Length: 71
Image 1 (cartoon, helix red, strand yellow):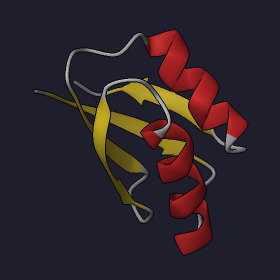
Image 2 (cartoon, helix red, strand yellow; image 1 turned 90 degrees about the horizontal axis):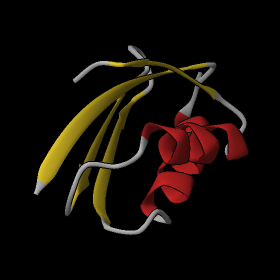
Image 3 (cartoon, helix red, strand yellow; image 1 turned 90 degrees about the vertical axis):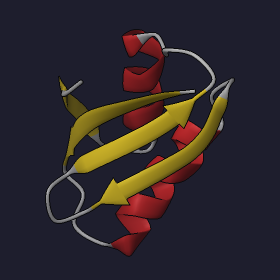
Image 4 (tube, one colour; image 1 turned 45 degrees about the horizontal axis):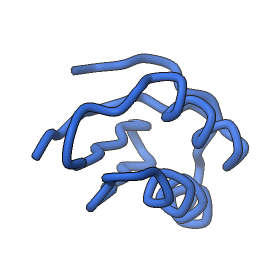
């Protein structure tokens, strides 16, 4: 399992977190997504590392922006 932390901008509420979680959970291999709205941190647990462009596309589909790949 791999855990990767991202920073997502534009989230302000629980609905925002839910939208991002739904899109990221739809990516192949993703088993868990944890969103901290206050900081914009999104922790993704997956079977293997995800391609940044796939993560960026999922976040943008939810209506937000992937700001930084933290780790």
